[in-house]
Length: 127
Ligand SMILES: [Zn+2]
Image (cartoon, rainbow, N blue to C red; front, side, top):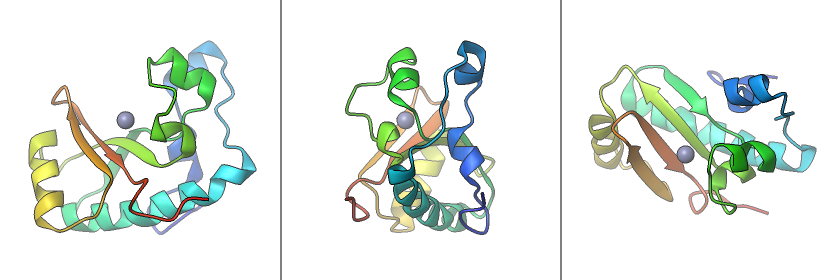
């Protein structure tokens, strides 16, 4: 399912850990609108960086979230956060660029200098 010009629902649900552990990480229908909004927001992130974004973790069902050690309130479980990397640069450079470009977010974290976590809870309306 295509969400926006550059993002599909599959990119948000794909998880090698979930596949390996046979965890069903499909998105409940009521959370699809959140993911659509996150994808729209990610288009702005992509535009600011000028290069494709590789999502390493998008939506996480509660079972998967527990398994990867996420906190129970993680925005990933609502479809409102994404971990990604991008050929633009390292996580620090990506974070700085997003700040300079004025991209709105709730949380922006450079995780272990390996990927960027962006949370969009406050940036958009959540039911
Ligand atoms: Zn994250």
